[in-house]
Length: 573
Ligand code: PEP
Ligand code: MG
Image (cartoon, rainbow, N blue to C red; front, top):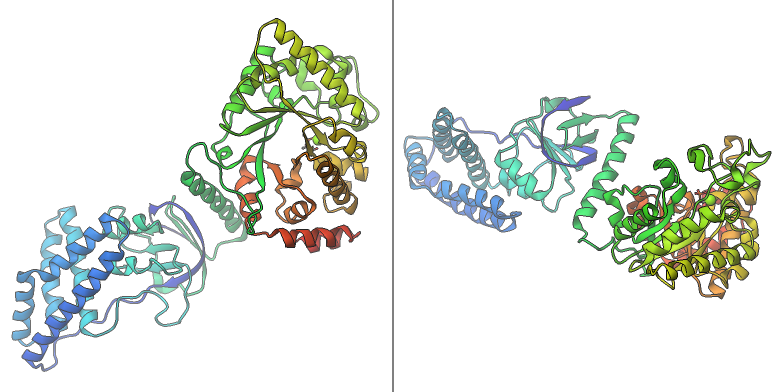
């Protein structure tokens, strides 16, 4: 069931409903009274009310809220108001009734004025009345919810809430408030906003039809309140919730800084992002740099391979989006399942006139294409070198299967440097070179490769495909082409050991890096760097912060001894 209200404070809360208490019972004034006693009860209640409200003003979230509370104290202190109450008592009313009548009288006058601000003051009067009467009846400070059932949810639904009641929510489990009354500029709205409580006011619903403990969703952006949501609605809002969390976190991170990332026992773990565009989302600020820039996707968007100058400008732009951090840019990885069509006339030499390969995944792909087309490769290497001047850029090589390929790349790079020297163009002479570890051959000779490069990046997508001989694009073998397969996990562990022996860092940049259930295995195996889609950085950093190094190491040991992929899944879940 969906109800519409006025959106007051942005955010999404998915949870359980607590209904607010009913409004206070009023006396009918028919009892016989002792005038002196009632007068005394009124003045005692005034003192009690004032002291409660001062405490509330002290706890108020910000100046606006404390000004509203102080204004209510001033109303209660007003001599005209006290005189009116005393006159009522002397006319034979009980103190509660006299307070009720006095407040109503002034409230009605203010309402009649038709002025918005005066109308708001009339709500203040009603709240003052409730506050004084509850002090008079010794009913404790105004609380909300759980009065009858003892149930405390995180979505409070009520007809009204006083300023005092809202401020009292400060340390409560309530994360969202839905009121059937109020407007976007009412006092309730001002205070809910300043407390950051997701809120919808003026909702068109009858709260008697709700039950404590019912599931609900409050969307403070659209003003929707959903009771007993359907599964799809819940899933949709779960995603929206994540986006809000990221937005909120982004707002807290100062420019140029990233979200800290350590395990709960203080081990620093880097979370970088994977990019395939130079049109970068704001989310990248949460990351510790760019861990994998897939230039084949970048070029496909540019409808072909850009010139050296344009490439250099694109790489510079990407690196400049990560001030003080590193940008790892992977040279073209085409061939295999990565379509050639997008390169049009500029198709690399080795792929030209090639109708198809019988076995493209095992054909001309990645570094093989580049080493076969010197012109294309040198253009990209030179552009990367040019962009590296004054920036922190690293080059990453895809689909490597031998040390010879690395050596060949280094020779070409040296030639590009020589060419730039002649052209008097500056570049980073110590540019770092990394090797993708995504073939069984690279795993087996990882120690030899480690001597030639500055870092490794494990591509779990291809590594799973090639280790398990299971096409990454074929759903019939998706269970085999999986990170949960013991041989794939063992390969990761072997690569970590080889890298550690030569003191080079290892990043995991395949899709498995964003699978939070696999993170403890990776960390236990020795991985201290992950590269994931920008939208996953927050979730991965949050998951890391809940892990301890010792439990990760223990889990890694257990998983490596388990051969059944279903059991591995269970252990990691
Ligand atoms: C991988 O293979 O895991 C990887 C990161 O590279 P791509 O998905 O681009 O092949
Ligand atoms: Mg790959």
